[in-house]
Image (cartoon, chains in turn brown, orange, green, red):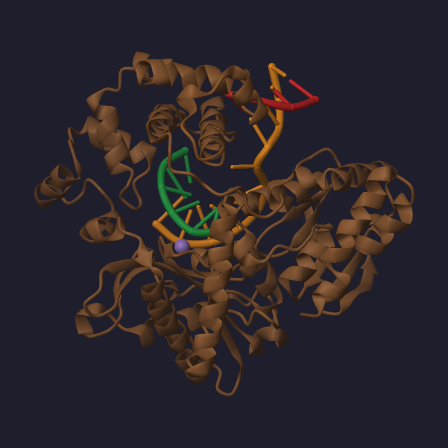
Length: 488
DNA sequence: ATCCTGTAGTA
DNA sequence: TACTAC
DNA sequence: GGAT
Ligand SMILES: [Mn+2]
């Protein structure tokens, strides 16, 4: 892999120079020159970065901010060293109690709606999740015999210790013991597990006297109006959708959809190259997946404007048509969004055409399927976004923010420094995920590494699965369902 | 006190 | 606004 | 909940 010659390895050693402050400027310019320091527009390719224009005059204040952020980049989750310590499976009673605490906190988060920012309870719940991770990676022994000193040595705060000892003594922390969880709260937890039902609709349904998911199904027979059609369709497959998809079945689903994308290419745009592959947790190499995410682009659109949404919409419709309906021997069991063909408006959006639905292979469970069709110029940003994970994306976007940029699934834009929250036009073109990391001044992370809280063992297992499966599929000359790990 | 793990699509 | 995607 |  050519990138290792001048990529991450050297970046590491440069960081050390940077800390000492000796040759900061040259280090900075060499490692991620252009957009950062010179405020130029450029074009990144596999082999480097080329300037294609100037955005604005240099702003000393802005550049200083960018440098500060860069020097702190290792604090961002998307740049943490890959893989946490191996997990142990002791102290399960404490972990269960902490999970009950998280449930109580999340109940409160669900009560607070209509606000832009996440409430304090949300972050408390996140920190409690991190405490569980800390316990799992704190050594293979029971903690009830640890002294305060031992806890401290392993990096637990005084508050951590208090909570753990409280749980050891009473079975639950104070918050859980003194919070009365009313029956309606438990019903809401159940109802929000249905696709399309969030805290607000769950609230509504409880007020209407719904007592469980089965009860909701019963009431729907009498009054079909109480939830939308899409929720009704999701509800039909509720039990199947609660289960995770084994990786081998996810691969079969991905193969089916990618094949359909190539069929659609022959119909929509004969002779042109189509790229279709799985993203999401499947691309990160996870052993099972909540759903299957497929990313599609047609390279013939390279010559067409990015706002030609209708091309992508029509291509998506053709893929869906090729997949067919389950009740006619096909693949799709239900749509959760309207297909583009149902809207015949001309649309000049630069965004993806999106499908969310439910699919089913013969003798298998119903599964959630997402398909997104992007313009090829956005493919690198789209695959970065669509591969996740959630935390990794948010962390990278946060880093971009602090550099004065805004990162999305479509590109990088410059935030306007006119005091408002407004955002400028897209400033860069990146043709690979690696180029996006480079552009932002971040060290590259492989898809299987993009889970900031995963254990080292899990990361290695994911990597091994991806390498093995790529070999096997190549040997059997099966249709590729992931980007080539050596070319992209 | 305030921030933290963001941005965009569909309905 | 609510819910969803990662 | 923890850092600033
Ligand atoms: Mn998905």
